[in-house]
Length: 458
Image (cartoon, rainbow, N blue to C red; front, side, top):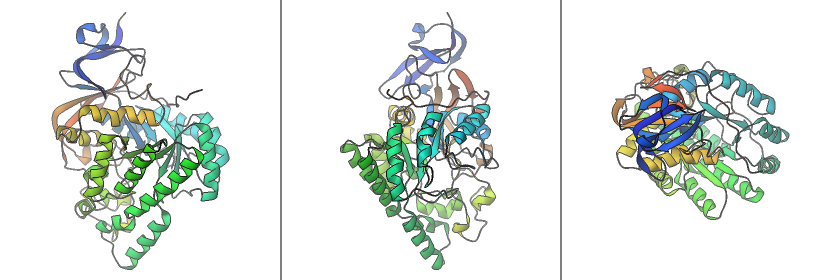
């Protein structure tokens, strides 16, 4: 019996091993993994030509803006950018219009996404002051987890106060799903923003000062207290500070189920870079100084930072208050919206660091495939090359050099602080459940994406 797809003549990479050979996929699952001569015949055969065959890469933090803000992005354009960036599965955020705050809206997002998406996806439900009774119904509707926006961000959703957090965290614990948090203290944030505005500090490099490291660190400490008291699985989104990383490390040592992610911009950029690219690098929370990045890199290598995710969050250039090259078009950084594209650029940026020796390719697979799938409880269906897992593959050419060109990104809007960056290490083929969705940087597939529901112990 022939497999549907065979990929051979490559280097198969897992977190534990790298070996010469390939894989075979039938009925959307891996059916053989091994040396070329051990693989079955295939209806379609891809010659990897000595490139590296990775498990399908996961970006577990994207804003595809569907429904309600589709002038910025939608699941069609967002997932196209994802496959062109080597991504096979995403986790989409709930701050849309209306917010994903009840079971009905979970179903709305599932239907919209499955009509449009080239990648598989997980859906998060948002937790606000008024919807604690919707937490368990959202789990039954298939959410992969929950999110609380403790920090003020796009949509300015109301967060639950401490009294409601007791009820919300308790219900989330009952669901057996993780709670992800946008960790910023709004009081600290508002105080320093107002102070800087009053002092007339309107330049882009003032952005980091408006949300200092204590803004994130205090929020992480606060959430850890509730999670430990109420037995909740906690995940820290877009962690940017060494103080938060140390708290996560300590909590793991105490046996808490706490995980964390960071992003390429926190690993590779600094506040002073905003003098060059202006509001294109404006993000919540802001990029930090190099001493924070060094701890985040250490955490990725040693395991107390679990994953890399991009926080892909496109807006129009008018909203960003910038042209495509970073020239500020508005009088103050406060007038420019936060967020930028990331899902298409994240992989080559980090593969470049792999080529520089910052981490091994096996370590990268751990933080970009296995760990995201484990955190969101879809492992080993996702995030692994093993028999019976979904046939998701990203083939990367570690020798290929390129220059990031904002104009060629596949998102509906293309604000990026990476325009002109030179990279070495590029995804050249993206395969979702055995379906080839990207070749040589261009989309070739159809909307086949499916919502991923968590794998829970009974």
